[in-house]
Amino acid sequence: MDLVTTLLLAVGLAMDAFAVSISGGATLREKRLRWAVIAGALFGGFQAGMPVLGWLGGMGLASFVGTYGPWIAFLLLVLIGGKMIVEAVRGDGESVRFENGTATLLLLAVATSIDALAVGVSFAVLDSPIVLPAITIGIVTFAFSAAGVLLGGAFGRIMGRKAGIVGGIILVGIGLRILLDHLFN
Picture 1 (cartoon, rainbow, N blue to C red):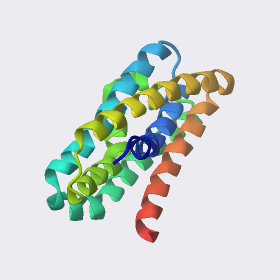
Picture 2: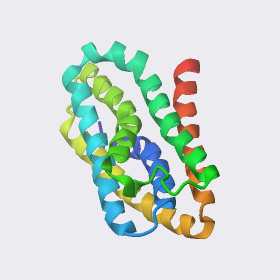
Picture 3: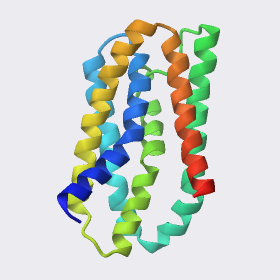
Picture 4: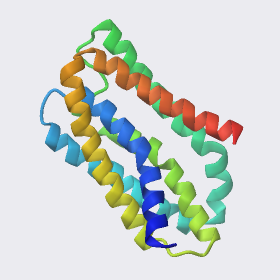
């Protein structure tokens, strides 16, 4: 695969992580740069690692990822997004926030990188090397995710508590898009 195609693939895979990062960044109260680096590292790491796992698993993972991957991503994103919406509407102080710890970020990183696992399977089927594409995917996702947290932080300062509602809606929307793509494509 040539460099331009690899970069386009990396940008495409990074979009969900970018949107989730904007959503999470909107709920941050402080230490935005720190969380931008943490989110970038986690999202980028998972986006880089999943294609390698898919490539190593090859055809054995193809049917599992194709069947259950979109459902897993949908459930994780809807549960986390729904929790954000409910707690923002209630005015609870404890919303789903990056500051609550890396557990939330890990779940989001898994949910947004399942499609990268499928990409790795396709690389195995095509007998294509995976190392350079995986590194490229990871770097691009890191950059997009870190930028998303910082952009979301600016948005959150403007929107206040409503940012939690908007962020939750974004996560639910991403989950629905993943599921609908799976069901109708």
